[in-house]
Image (cartoon, rainbow, N blue to C red):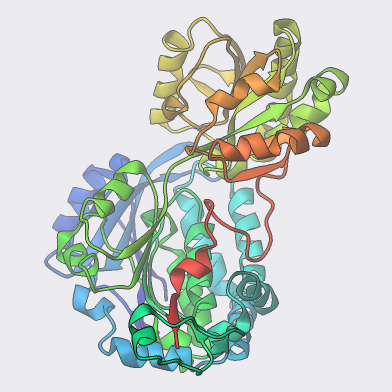
Length: 515
């Protein structure tokens, strides 16, 4: 489903949309439109829709060995769907069909998609090459994700997710709650008692998932949530993950194109903010549930539309680490190794990646820890090389000259192209200014409890060590609004049905109907 041509140093790559199970390919764009995109390739923004009915995304090509820009451009060409084509033509009929699809059939379909991803390695390889061609991170990171992709489609794991969050019985049929109802005041006036057993069911919904580009796994997570709730879903990947439509679309059709989930799943990209599409999709009544991942700007643009549609927000957050005195003094190398694992999740693009390490010690010990951590990060730079973007380099330079100018910097690489850095600071720093790019801040406190006021709902995850310290602080950290209080080094660990951003997501994605 990938169709590529190279013209005068510009690689044009046509990618499909999958609309309710059917593949939709874009037309080839006009030369003038391509030239305009190439001229603005550094912005990496989407253009369109063009008069031909497609979106164009220009991206600078990166040499896979040196991670330097080659001067060439890759232009992704994606179909610009009509908003009406993304909406279910018969919403009630679609949801009734999905509700009547037994959970075992759902799980078997998930397994079939996983097997299809294994067998269709060519499509996965093509998607991987596209994801990597313009990435500033080594191919090894992309290969690791793609190798893991088929295993994410695990019917047994989705079954456990359903059972923990909803209960399989409630998703497949009406479940009696096991007690009678209490008569209301009006019924009591006429001495009317209803003896019919009360029942409850989790009913599927129409779902719109607007996903973020910080990690390619995000649209996969949304897709699995939709299938676990038997949803009629539209999944919009970010431009950075649009190539995944190739692999997922091919696997979906290979598994069983006639399956109700296949016929009521849409994987399609459109330019964020395109009112031609979003006015219809974000209108009240277009969907029953919306799931919005992304930046404050993305979340704000959706929520500003108002309306009554139940919207689940997966907004921007950050994470940090709390390292107790016993560990940082007895084995700073082990502490740094564990904390670095949390700091490098998605190359610091995920809300679970730790940007600040709070160490319980004096200033001299904190400096020693910062030096040790810089050495650990240097090892990661060798194992998984990356090249900070020009914008990230500029932000790092400004921080060194400005907000963090009086802090101690431990740098790997040469300015301005540092590969990673640790900054030992004594003052407060607003992590909203954090540039990513493998920068970790270290701050010393006399007692980890002194760091509790720094926590709030904007903090996703706190990794804590030693374990006895984590257990003693867990309630206090959670009370500040943090959703994950995990052992140091375990911020990326998970299990089927794990709550996300403090929510049992599947319970939010269904309608709970009394019957």
